[in-house]
Image (cartoon, rainbow, N blue to C red; front, top):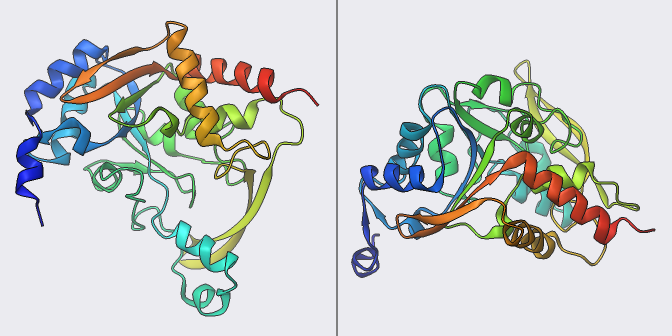
Amino acid sequence: MIDRGELLARPLVTRGRLVEDLGKLGLEPGDAVMLHASVRAVGWVVGGPDTVIQAILDVIGPEGTLMMYVGWEEAPFLSIALEEGREEAYLEECPPFDPARSRANRKWSILTEYLRTWPGARRSDHPEASVVAVGAKAHWLTEDHPLDYPYGPGSPYAKLCEIGGKVLLLGSPLNAITLLHYAETIARVPAKRIVRYKMPVLREGRRVWVEIEDIHTGGGIVEGQPSEGYFRDIVEGYLVAGRGRSGKVGAARSYLLNAAELVDFAVQWLEREFGKP
């Protein structure tokens, strides 16, 4: 149920206002951009979450591409069941990940499921690192997502850097940038924490369990150093160095960052801080 008082306390934000603010921030026609957003932080958006997506598409135009990390809504529950030993019943009937039907993880933003169901949306077929994209390069960005090390070379995250893409934060915290897992994957850090897990996926109409190997994206690649802490340090350092742009989009403190530049900065930071044996 809508809290009327809370809603009225937020500034009214229209699609036209969002388009204007995004342009001032530096978003341009033809951009490929990865989005992290809090719709609540943006304000009382006329038309709701759909308006936020449409405003971005208005700015980047038909030659641009909008991408989000969406994951899979069931993945965290599957992991918990395995860790708690409640495997038998869960594993017997847990549905497989199906890129066409499996829900996006709305924990990351209400917009994940909105973008997943947007007309023309394409989704990568990784059950945990899944992304959705809409626009000119959506198919290329999402195809052939590697099963192992899904944030690394050949992934949608690496491809975003390859094409000069950007990262857009609308009211999201600085430590929420999923692209930094790409930097963690390629940085030369000794004794990097590695995880192995299994997930059910849909293959030729059948549920198949697959083994996946990856860096420890949930807790950091170095023991005792949670990523949520050093991700913020990396992005703050990047901004202090005069990189990226910041401003208001609606009521939300927002940032527009160059994807490849941010990854290069992050790799240097990780290797400097954690690269010594």
